[in-house]
Image (cartoon, rainbow, N blue to C red; front, top):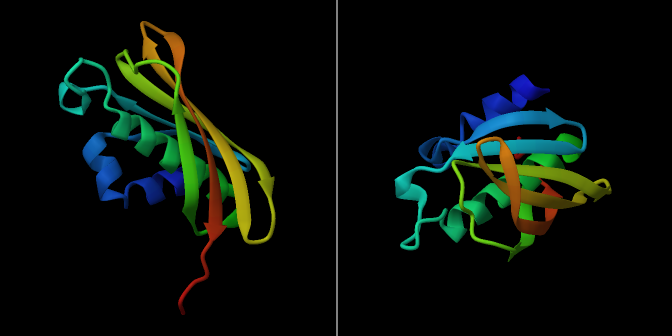
Length: 134
């Protein structure tokens, strides 16, 4: 399943631009990470909220896709709990509930420095299954 997820990630040009890596992918959960580069930081020196938000969104969609198949984010919210100061961001998402066409997923995003992780954001989202158009 991880290899299929990596193949999907490789088709997301924005994810490639940011340098996102799929670390884990199994039924009901996903983990994404990216290195915090200077061009991903805001003026105070920590990872931009948009980068943190993207990572949460993509991670909850991967988790949802693990149980629904092809899907898109219907909605999500992010609570930032502290500045994202670190060398690397790690997002871990789990499916809280899944029906036939929709899943509710949560994600926690951590900033990592020297192996130590600190929670920087929490997200909750709704993921909807999309049908093939053929």
